Image 1: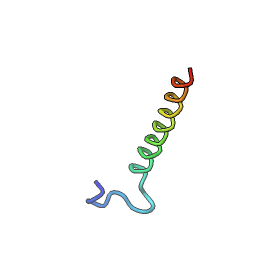
Image 2: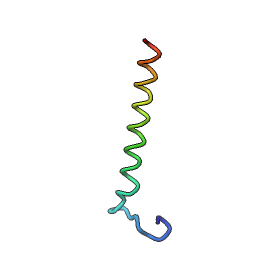
Image 3: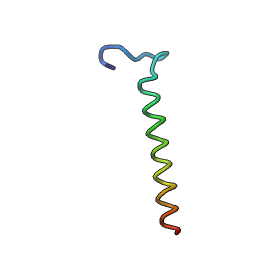
Image 4: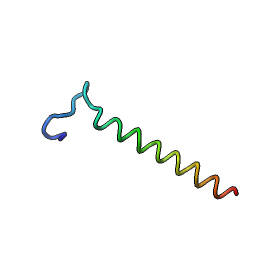
Length: 39
C-alpha cells in the first residue's frame, strides 16, 4: 500500500497504530520478564 501512495505525511494511521502497538508489546515483555525474573 505504501508503494501505491496510500500513506502520506498527513494520513499515516495504518503505519502509526501498528508501531504504537508494537512498542506497547515491547514494554509489556520487559515488565513480564522483569517480574518473573525478580520473583
